[in-house]
Amino acid sequence: MQVLEILALGAAISKVDQAGCEQLLKNIAKSISLNGRPKAEDSAELNSVALLSVWANHVRTINTVKGRKTPDFKAVIGEIAVECEVTNSEPKSHQLELQNRSHDLTQRLQVVLTAPGLRVRFTDDANESDFCEMISAVVGLKPGETRESYGLWFIQAYETPIQADPDAGNPVWWPKQYAQPATFHFSFQVAHQSANQQVTSQSTIEVNWSLSTRSYINSLSKKENAEQASSTMPFILLCDVTHLPGAFGWYNDNFPPILKAWSQKISAVVLFCRGITGLDSLQFEYQIHTNPNAQIAAPEELTIQTKGKMTIPFNSPRQTSSNAC
Image: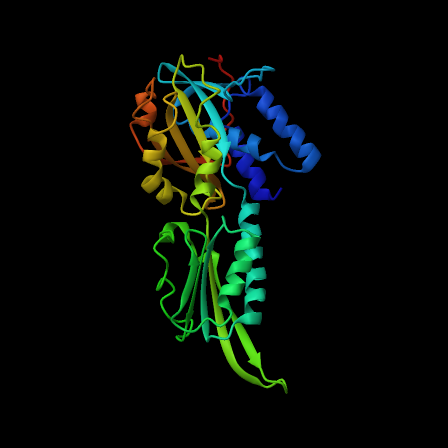
């Protein structure tokens, strides 16, 4: 682990009730000793507990019971006890894999490309079979012509250089800007050579890839039936979306109707991103969605704000032990 990661881990632990979350802290310590870092699920749970300190008085983890599905922990918000379940978004490795696939696709496209420029769009739902279709579609493609498989990939040949508006000609199903940050875009110059190895022309391949709806919903949808809920108290689902680009914009626009259709056992969903600010503190940014059809409403103290930020200095004192709820 890097120094800043260690400091951020310590900052999160400083907000945790040592007695109430003893097993979680033991799991983290064991993972660090064996693998050099905590497991992703333990990190998500730790950060969730730290974030809940904004509203919760007491937090304690729940030991798993063989043959039963139980929530990750319980907390008291205001005077109301709640059950909490934690999940985390697609790992960063998923995006690195897509980046590698983009470069591989570009190498394969340059062999068959003859147009001056090629604009390529694909989502992470596209598989190897789709890539083969894309390569076949490029053969003989003339400027101004397009080929696509709706919701999976789109190809457009053009005459204009790469300086043209990168958003021009996007298919109607292509996600909004918040879901396709600049890090998902790159261009590649292809030199066409004659038989005597003279460069006769150059082409530009411009590639954008984006995350599909599945990437934003997959981890949450696994909890949509709220099988861990006891149905005797509010059930809060927390999700670490740090590695999902443009997460808050996407969820703000798309998640409310999805949540409305999920189990009535879910009282609210708390989404959060974590980061390091000023090299001296851990910061959480969060967004809260309440379920209008919930059987038991989430505490008002939690839902009175739909978004906010929380900062924990690296030198924050540890929280003293308290009676578990």
